[in-house]
Amino acid sequence: MNNGQAVQALAALAHDTRLAIFRMLVGRGPEGLSAGVIAERLGIPPSSLSFHVQHLHRVGLVTQRRLSRQLIYAANFNVMNSLLGFLTENCCGRDAAVCTPACQPEATVTARSRRRSA
Amino acid sequence: MNNGQAVQALAALAHDTRLAIFRMLVGRGPEGLSAGVIAERLGIPPSSLSFHVQHLHRVGLVTQRRLSRQLIYAANFNVMNSLLGFLTENCCGRDAAVCTPACQPEATVTARSRRRSA
DNA sequence: AGCATATTTCTACAATAGTCGAAGTGTCGG
DNA sequence: CCGACACTTCGACTATTGTAGAAATATGCT
Image 1 (cartoon, rainbow over the protein chains, first blue to last red):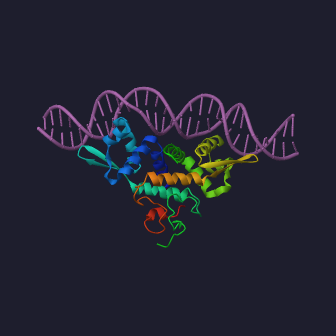
Image 2 (image 1 turned 90 degrees about the horizontal axis):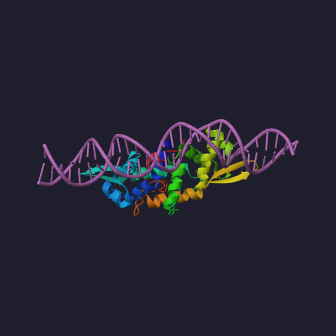
Image 3 (image 1 turned 90 degrees about the vertical axis):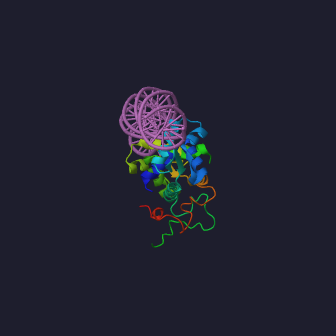
């Protein structure tokens, strides 16, 4: 993920409604949820939901598929993964595990410093 | 970090100029950089720099201290850490390490996220 | 005190983002 | 083919954010 993509993804998540949508979809997993259900749960009009969920879709954070009449949205973990990778790589101290959030089980080897030959 | 704080932090980073500022400060470490130097390096007017760096300061992502006439800004790794923690906790599958970016030394990290940033 | 430097705050404007009803599009059941 | 349903797109408006010169504030030097 490059700088521009990161800005886009961050902007997509930087909104109450969209973060709520994304978290809801993350909780649901690959199965996803239909647009109508999301809108109803959040108590927002369908057109507003569509506006926001498409923002997330445009930047790749959610996938879209049709199931008969409904459009099912689901979180795209790969892109979220890339975003977190970008942030840890570029927005944390380079030498240290100074910014290793919920993930220092035992190893803590900074993935970056371990660039083993491909 | 709660939902609202996360949205604020994400919004702060979701802008080309601010992300550039933050990355510059991350690269510099605790020593930080003065407002003037940052503005000059980015080629933006002082008032614009002030606007953006204060946005980052307001949400806690950068610290501010005075050194004689200059105001020195530095990245606040704690808050960045909290943000990453929030994202991994709330925006990734809860059961799985489905979204553990730079936390697996050599295993699952996608080849793309491993390339060193230029 | 008076002047230079570093940075912020003010101000006015430009641009972008968000809201939501209404109209349009795709899909199914009969 | 028609009507109902699920959702999106359009359109018009409001609100928020970004930009940058000019004026103001803070600090230091002599």
